[in-house]
Every structure is written in C-alpha cells, then in structure tokens.
Length: 431
Image 1 (cartoon, helix red, strand yellow):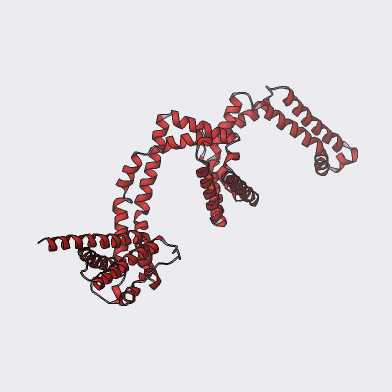
Image 2 (image 1 turned 180 degrees about the vertical axis):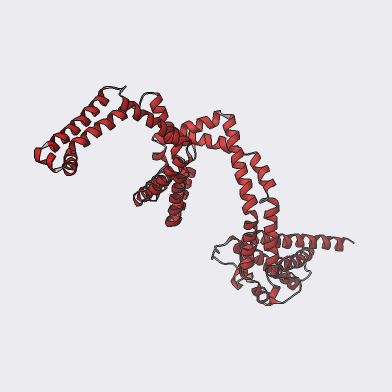
C-alpha cells in the first residue's frame, strides 16, 4: 500500500493500479495504467515469492525476476516522470526538465524551424523538384478525375476564407485598386489612336452623318430661338415692316440647306473642314501634353463622380457573389464557359513546357520571397507562443503527444530488468 501512495503524486489514479472495467479515453493514460499495473504485479510477485520461501529452485528464479523487474520499472518510472514533473513531488535536482526549460524549448524549436524549413535556400531546393504547373494542369483538364473530397474541401475553405474576411476593408481595397487602375489609364492617346484608325479606314463617315443629322434636328427644334434673337436685334423699322421674320426664315433655311448639302456631299468644304479638325484632335490627343492633361482631369472627375463610385461598388459585389457561388459549387462553375476555358488552360499547361517552366519559376520565387519576408516573423511567433504558455500547458501537450511511447519505455524496462535478474540468478547458482 505504501507503494501505491508513493505513485499517486505523478498523476496516476490509485484505481489505475488495479484491474478495472473502466476504459480511459486517452491512449497515453491507458498505457500508463498498464505500465503501473505491471510494476505492481512484479511487487506482488516478489512478496509472494518471499513468503513461499525456497521450497523449490523455480521460486528463486521467480523472485529474482520480480525483484529485478521492480528495479528496472521503478528506474524507468523515475526517468519518465522526471521529464515532466518532480517524482513524488520532491524537488530533486535535474527533474521537471520540460517545465523548467520551456522557454529554451520554444527557442530551440523556432531555431529548428528556421534552419531546416524557413530559409530561402531550403524552400528553393524543395520547390525545385515540384511541378506545380503540371499538377494544376492535370486538375483543370480533368477535374472529374480528381479527388472529389479534396475539391469540395478546398472549395469550402476558399468560401469560408472569403466570408471570414472583413468585407468593408477588403471591398475598400478592391474598389480602391479598381479606381487606381482607372486613374492610371492614359485615355488621351487611346482615344486619339481610335479616332485616327476610324478615319483611316473610313469608319468616321457614319459618325459625321450622325452629327449632321443631330444638328438638323436640333435646329428644327430650336428655330424659334433664332427667330427671337433676330427679332430682338432688328430695328424698329424692320420689325414694323416684318423684315425681321423674313431674315430669320432666310437664316434658318440657309442653315438647313447647308446641313443637307453636307449630308449629301462627302466632299463638302465644311465637312472636309470638320474632318481636318478631327485629324488635329486625334494628333493632339496622342502628342499634346496639354490636351492629355485636360483629358486626364476629365477622367479623374468621372472616377470621383458618385455615380461611378456606385458602379464600382456594384461591380465588386457582383464579382464577390460570383466568386462565392463558384467556390461553393465548383461543379457548376466548371460546367459553363469558365469551365471550358479552365479545361483548355489545363491542357495548355500540360503541353506547353515553356509555360510550365514560367509558372513554376513564378511559384518558386513567390514561395522563396514569402519565406525571406515572413520567415523570421513565423519563427518569432512560434517562440513567443511557447513562451506564453504556462508550464502546465507545455507539460500536458508534450505528455499527450509522446506519453504513450514513454509508457512503453516503462514496460520494456520492467521486462528487461526481470530478464537481467534471471540471468544474474543463473550465474549466481551456477558458480
């Protein structure tokens, strides 16, 4: 019974030393129970052999086996216990090794990660043997042949990550990036080149016809304004004789006849003059810095317009909703035009060696760059996390991870000690 009381401080329940129908949940605790039960069985066997006495030579072998097994089991119990706590609660030197050195363990683990996994040279060497592009090509070309659980799991992960992100912040970043890209576009040369190409191919004719037709309709709808202007500027005599009305009609008829002639005659002088102005506008848009600055100012005003901002907001929401739908249902996403395009991309990745090499190089450089930029931060995170744990947390986590194997050491020590005891007894009785 004294042995049972001595074993309780190491965290073993007293009932674990005795046969029980209760099953412990954790494998390490079950193995601890088995190792302790073996040690107690050796103690009981030793007591029984001493009580029986030398009635038969076999009893001596049994007693030697039990005695040495107790010594081996107790020695290994002490060694295993000393890793995690003070045996029997006594502050024996060089015990409770892990709790006393948890900070050094965290630093050592962080250094191990840095030196063996999170260095650019190691990552580059590891990534050098991976053909990421080919694997992506096989998946895209034959998504049905891929592991459905992997695809569904990855889809759920992507969807959950997108929903977990701060949508206001993420949306602001995306919308800000769209607005920034719009502001970065130099529209003036693009517009000038479009006008120049249209005029070179003769595609500006319908535009000119549309402008002339619009001018004619505008003149017809606002001829009363011309009449009013002429009436207001005419003298009293002209108004009294009605010549102001005749003059207004003559001006309106002349303008309408001029527009009709321009519409019917592609070589009309005014039409040619307008085309000359278009050519100059195209040239200024491409080469005049002042004109380009004016267009850029108009562009920025349009981007800053609330209506344009609302359009960008809608564009982001539609894009995010589409990505979420595709992530939640990858099968439906792969069935449409997007799926066909992705399958073609997968085939191209498998057949084009240069494209694969380019993508693999990009992936490798990205991984190496991320390691160089964030490797030290990850190492620091590991070290500080372990330092932040209390001694009990570190002890319990490590003991749960390796405790089962440590209990096997106790079992093996008990059996090996018993066999050594039998060997010593054989030598003793032989000589």
